Length: 234
Image 1 (tube, rainbow, N blue to C red):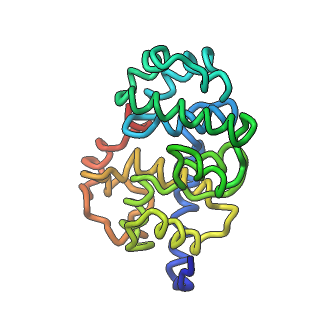
Image 2: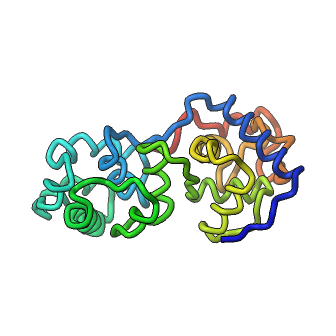
Image 3: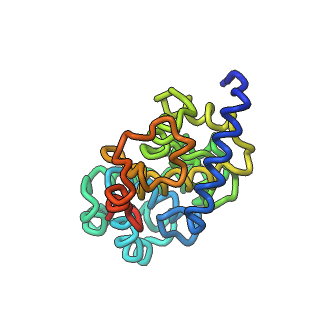
């Protein structure tokens, strides 16, 4: 997808924001627990419409029973539903795991492919999930456009796009490829901890002077600090 060259001042400002956020959140990482690419793929699919912490809570039980695509593909539906039940939408999520595992067994010899074009052909896997897996399990740079990422890049004035694919390409043009995965973590952590959807903690924001949306939330430092979370939502 062709993207016009970005304005150099925008590039400088965007990269400055990323540097500040890197200093603010030195521990930024994927907040889903995983031991291998298959686990990350599965927990990312499960994280839709629930929180990472809830997914992390069911993860040990899920993978103790079904540690690989072959075992999960043959899992009894009722048992899988019981395990993922606490996450909500358990029937749909069970169906997604069974189809995903079966596709891995049938198409990729029960292995998770390490290419975007292959990952997005799997049931329930879009570009967002594929980039999470590539960036965090395969060290292949990727931009993860989730709801936090999309909200923040628009608030920061980096793009006006709302379509996730267009957002991904617009932001990719502002940063070197090597920064894409950590940029995603920095923005997602900031969105979960300070730049909330309804009431951002503007007065306690480390990039306030670089943000054209400053004032969308409380600007008083004391009031804003009360909105700051030390970790992502439960």
